[in-house]
Length: 403
Image 1 (cartoon, rainbow, N blue to C red):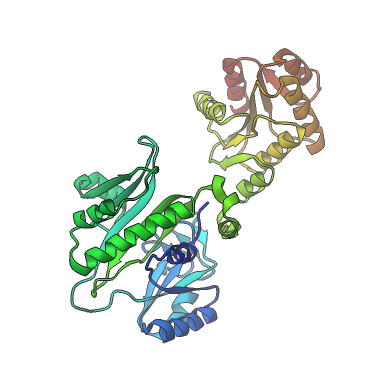
Image 2 (tube, helix red, strand yellow):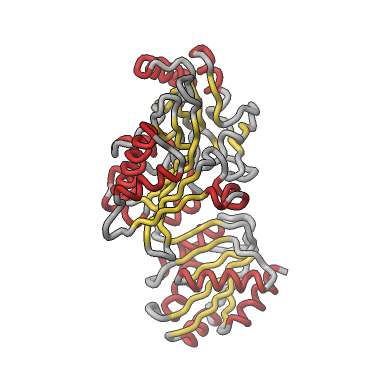
């Protein structure tokens, strides 16, 4: 589960991670109030106005309606309201949102942390995530903060620092010092970075996160180390342990169909193709999408109804798939292991009758327990549903349906 920058920063702060202070606002007027409060608390006189959406590249992105960037600087308090007005309610298009962009409902009014001092501010990159190949968490760091880490990895792989942490013993002090040393830090900045890394790792473990990305981590001109931005992804499977974090979910940032599917305990991801698919099992779903492509079509979604599929889940899957206007055919591909094929077939027939006239062809491929009985139920239903036994037969019927 993704959360907004302002939520991520509050989470980090609760674990002792130093952050760029800021206050969230949902209107130009509340943005001005936030700036005044921020000035009173921090003394800042410049303000960074940041669009809050679940996507990166906000600083380079553009608001379609006003051509404002998604991250702007107000050099005095009088500019805050106007700059917030140019962002709020607009559609922000970034490299990660695609051409359709995302509507901005909130902005973060943050303090200026690039103030003059004894030394020049310096940006770093820092992230923590699970390395599945090694079975360890890995801390990734770079001196090239503020840049796309993919670009740094491609052009300057030697500038990517990696430190693996054994989950059985946790982060050791020498490991945090090792990362700070490789970043070229010394003196008080070195000590501050060691504290920052340790606190960040504690936050990562304590929140059951799947990824932390802080880009940039800033060394200020007076050698403080703080998070200027924060991208946090929480493990959905652990949210039952964190009711407070589960409440941070912003449904407005998620695809409405995916939200609806979640209410029916369906694993659904919308894609851009023309063939809807409904499958029991993630591996079979991936194979089904490959089969659709080989047949000349493009998958319109990933939909796993799970091992306990019944008429209710099949009907919910139908209704979600049919909301996509690009779907020209639906392929149901079921292996009857835990669930019997005749039960699935009856579920398909019941769901079809419940929904009414379905405007696109439906191909049902059943294999496993009672597959022949399931095919007979489909064939004798009198509905516009055709059965298939082999993958080849299903692919041919998909090709005929979309041609």
